[in-house]
Image (tube, rainbow, N blue to C red; front, side):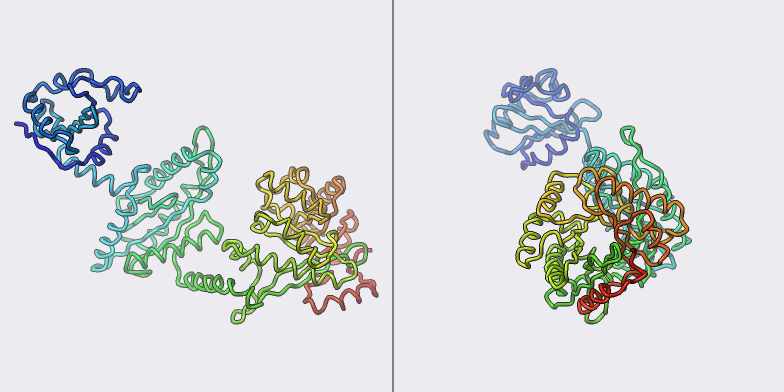
Length: 550
């Protein structure tokens, strides 16, 4: 028995369903003959009807169908035919009038099957097959209600993939998608029947673990997940190392609502990343206090420049027994928290886009102060955020013109992280600064992404050896070999060398013996407030200090 009736148009819904089963979509002309060429393009074999409509469905009443379609006229309503169509899997047809064509969608699912399919699509991630954020929220709420009435504890883990973005950037999104699928499989391999994994978005996953033994069981599972991600992923023959950082929370100790538990695991995840990534961290209330302090600091940082909380200290640089320059070091004296170290607030300023403004202030203040010195140069650090901001060379040039400081008395220090991308803009920026007569120093050489190609590509005047190589210089033969090579390499490239972190006469003597040009560190002087600079210069000019190499 077949039922024929007009139904409210649901073409968009049916097209979505048909797109996943395109072999059930057929096209016919007004005489129900097969359409072999649609819009001038040959149809794929999967959608070509091999025969006319009536040959496809001989069990249909031709007169009734024709009459029903005529009665619709040009209505947008489709014609639905329900009932047995002669094959075990067929349950109905929907016929749409599209211009001079009929589009016929053959349904091969029962209502229950269709409902189950739609529900699965709504609650699962199509890429990995894992339950999605919607299903996660529902499951977590249900499980928390269940644990509230018992002595049971559950653990929640938030996972972020480490170094996932470079995979997308270098190998493309198809490789990134494949990596996410492999990551989902690897997560599931670590789980038991008490655990369930979800993909929330991007490279963010979660795991809910229940059963006896929590929270210790959750901690063990998190560690096994971290270990599992230490093995490489192979995509298109390329071995990729992508770790995971995990934040763990437990209910009820860390919260009894989804929001509380998610916040706790999120805070723990932040701590895991801050500690170096590739590790799991359980939530601790002290983490939240640190995070709140950090947010307070971030809000305060926005007002620090306006409220004149910043200052600059200057650390002397010695050469040939004389003080030849000073490095400008930014300081922040918070009205409530006191002195905040640069390692704490500069990354915040960079992340929040404040470094260009702060850096411009430092440059102007340092240049103004240098005008009060005899001929000493001033070294100013440029953060990656400043260097990559458009208009840098114009701002530097305008500042020198405004202050009246000769360009050869300014040295800009950049780190290797700025140069990771050897772009034309980066090269042009350094070349322009060089043409202006400004000295360029490569700071912290040897500790980040050292590449000798930097020294060939970019016009540096000075290489600064990081204090990491200087600390054990008197006894570390490997450190001596590295420093000796850097000095010789720099001189062969017509560059000068400054050693940072010099603290003992023995270090200074050894560096002098291998030809290091300049020394900087506590042996020469600690960073000085601006008020002490004039006296220090006078004292250095009138006395011979054993700290200064002769």
